[in-house]
View 1 (cartoon, rainbow, N blue to C red):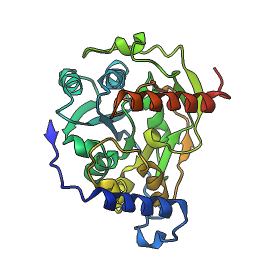
View 2: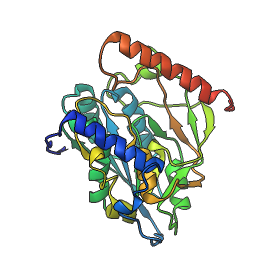
View 3: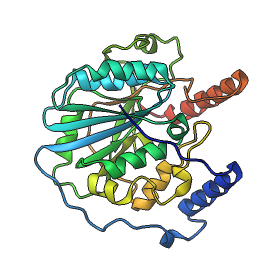
View 4: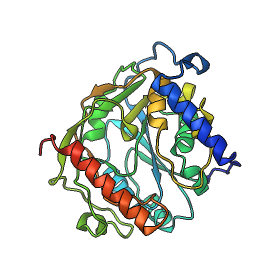
Length: 306
């Protein structure tokens, strides 16, 4: 397991100013796009048996990461080679144990790659994603989250969709998601210990995606190596004391000048839950944030089909 060293973070107030300026630039309020690098106008299409790197982060989400890694073990791709990269902290014992377990699983066309980093770096997801982007030798890089599961045939269908593709960014046009699950839900409890676990997907609803959201950003490998992941925005490469909201997802699309192109990739699932393992602070604060999350999810799901 490879470790990544920490950097010293600047003062909190300075980080706050950096973040506000970056969000204002991305929203168009500050017309300073010229200050940031531009991607190439066209990239070479790759054909044949492609190499995909899937990049995920895990902090106190071992019971979700288990489903993601299990899906690769159970439904090994045939038409694409996969490097599964997970960024984690050794302070998270359950995630460390899970990764040790899966390191022993031999899966055809899948290579496991675990990258340990200080939790302060893990809390800023853009740091790990940028590290992966700049160091990947894959044809395509899928920046995802550990609650995303690749069901039977999903990655082989993706391989077919990516043949000769020149787009800088693509994404599945739909995903299948659970309702918000409580910590005592049987699905989450089943993955409480390191093991290969199955997901039948019968109690999921289908959601249509309209852009390459944070866990669904499938990036051309040449773009990743050229641009990194928000490498030009220092605020998204600065360690933090607690988990940070992923504003860099939108910034990444802005830098690429693309919301992504929708492609057909059936079998992409996402497990949603009420309590986010990254929540920190008092029990009251956590309860309030979880309640807000339930309301937001209900509002977004109200028109989706079963």
